[in-house]
Length: 529
Image 1 (cartoon, helix red, strand yellow):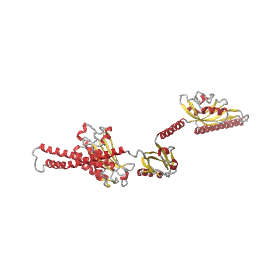
Image 2 (tube, helix red, strand yellow):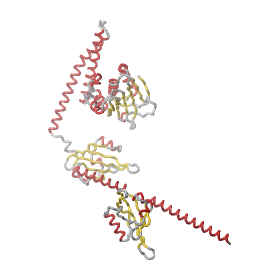
Image 3 (cartoon, one colour):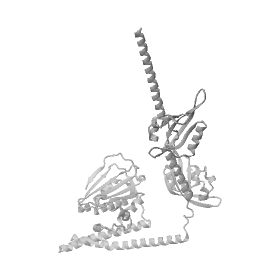
Image 4 (cartoon, helix red, strand yellow):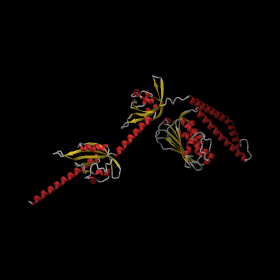
């Protein structure tokens, strides 16, 4: 009999343990659920003093949850900012009604202000209906509130700037029909806003060719010219339009948004401006004609000097008889060549300024052109005692360019590198396709370099650094300016990157439209000079 009693007792203990384990498991599940939805849960009695609060509140109040037990729900220790939201929440509690997502400001024990979102429901005794308190949840929304405030400030700033400027805002859908025009569009544009809404963008504003091309490719366009003809007044208005493509969360094109400004009055030059412009153009033409004529007049005697000095230094007609005479002939020959180079540069410059320089485009092998340029300057490389290394992909696509002018670009950059690289230095020439499909040709040296502040200067006409240490290698200061103009004539850009005493990188970038075919990614071809 005693054994049966003991066995029954053990079974009762096991059942009690299982029940306790079940309750603890359910409690853990409840806590996990709470943590996944809100930051903490709370319960207060009829006097609004805490009966229970979960551990998550410690992170917000800065004190352990058990410290809050028995304290008032809205203790002024933490809720120092008594605003309308807090007062309305207290009124809701006094009326024994629920409240949801009330944004209340709290100050933790460290003095940090935090924004909370509180929700609560009243609790009543099931039989008597007596009010017993409240149960609810809390979530910290400080970061979200800060972001919303910053977004509100940003929107207000954009609105203020738009109202103060003479520009208007616009939006278009995926079919490029105008869906939004700012309220002041009528005043700024002088056009009826209601007629603009729903209109095809292409009909409302006639964008220039470059703007239309960028829009067709879903690209950003800035400051593009546009026109609109007011049929009723037979008046054409001129605008400057900028826009940016908009894509939805799945990456699909959703339209455009941008700004515009009326520049009709600015695009009408007054008589004084036109007169000054015409005078400047006449002066520029006169200067260019003078330079061209003087250059042509100088080339004839210079060629004679070069020819005769060459005959003298090579003793074509017999021995000079004195070693110093040979040296004089060599000096005359070199000086005449130097002057002729400057004359030729001035001629090139005058053609560029007159707009008479045109491209004779043809398919070109980049590797072959660079190789020819390097061989043309081989003697100068040997005299300067520098190492020249070329790395070009042998399968680099052909390009469409002017052979003579591209050769002049590369030769000018190589000549500069040789001129300003001391003995024992290195020059490296590379060419390849960029990530956007454009062509990069780079000439890099370990020469004397240029101060960053002097780079814009050396790219201008007759621009020189003024460094006395480089005086022996200086020319007229036209080489880089002409090179830049020739690159831009091809639709490209010339970039100079340099540091004093650390060398220089000259990067020619030609647009992808000049690249004629693809590239299979072969190893670069390397040659040493």
